[in-house]
Image (cartoon, rainbow, N blue to C red; front, side):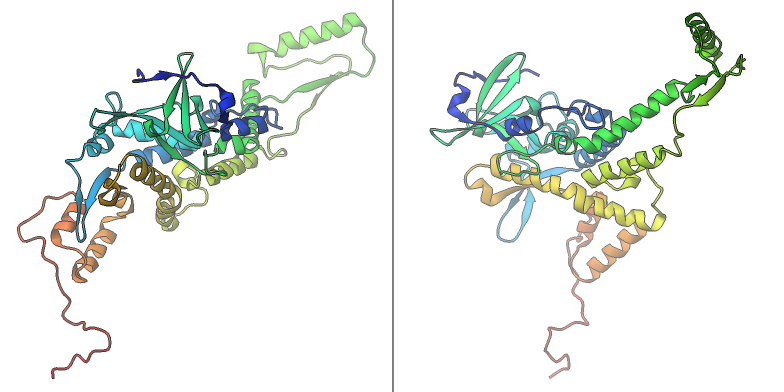
Amino acid sequence: MKLRNLNPFTWFRSNSIATSSDEITALFTTSKTKSGTVITIDNAMQISTVFSCIRVLSEGIACLPLHLYKKDDKNKSKATNHKLYDVLHFQPNSEHTPISFWEMCTASLCLNGNFYAQIIRNHRGDILELIPFIAKNVRKYRIKSTGKIVFTYLCDGKTYEFKKEDIFEVMGLTLDGFIGVSPITYQRETLGLSKAAVEHGAKYFANDATPPLALEVPNELSDIAYTRLKESWHQSQGGDNKFKTAILEQGTKANQLSISHKDSQFLETRQFQRSEIAGMYRVPLHLINDLEKSSFNNISHQSLEFVMYALQPYLVRIEQAINTQLLIGDEKKTFYAKWNVAGLLRGDIESRYNAYNRGRNMGMLSVNEIREMEDLNPIDNGDIYLTPLNMVEAGKDNKDD
């Protein structure tokens, strides 16, 4: 995708305050972990649990409908005539559908802790497009002399400068209020142990799950005998000859060097790391295909917790970013963006119908409101609300005067 309306980056870094991302880079000077593996934002998705968690979160959010609403003193309605409504709900830009755009937004928050997009406006100031940026190529600065915030973006070997009002920014968990922190950076050791376990298993099975052996001979060997024994062993037991019968001479013994996977708790380690990474993203284990501790009774409750504690923080961050950055002036008092999570909370058909029945009988829901939640067309006279007749105001006598 081509960038638009860019100005070359002309002012010097000495005129700015260092970004939090630079401070984090200085703090973690190497991406190599104590387990010996290298963990970066780019390769973290190679860890299956990280990939699964981010996919669950990003796809779960991207599949939800996002609407722009207009409110007055009593009512609210979808602001379908507002330019921003089409950008949020139908097409953020000329190359992305809403699902791909919001998937990228959520994945960027999960990996980098921040998401950025360029705001494209017409001459009247209406927002026409949001063009996503690769978060790791963005730097955020505060100019010392003016206190204003500017962004730079590295693209095709060139660095471009943007004003704050030209960037749509969604910030994740932040420690300084200036920039979000990357979960990958702060959890490198946890991810490193998981990656090390995967690499260990890969090497083990690449060797046909055969543990390394040492050949023990009763007497000292000459150089010629040592070379002969080594070459004959590799020839008889290497490559396609693995698992064939080995003939050992002169009292030679084959001893296993490594401990078994059971003794090294390999499977337990992988299970524990899967649980830790899922906890990092607050994704229930059954959503990443780990049903060991799940049952029919608790999966429903876990799914509800997933919406409340895993998805909701991301949804609110995006909603508030839209409301504060994409709406201008008095629009912020009248319009607001809102994700519709009703589809994730609907439950089974019996539970939904019982809830609708209670809401209808209490006077909370009309027939058409219920039909809308079930994706059904409205009916005539379906906007009537019922009033329970067997209730009176607290403290009043229900007997006739």
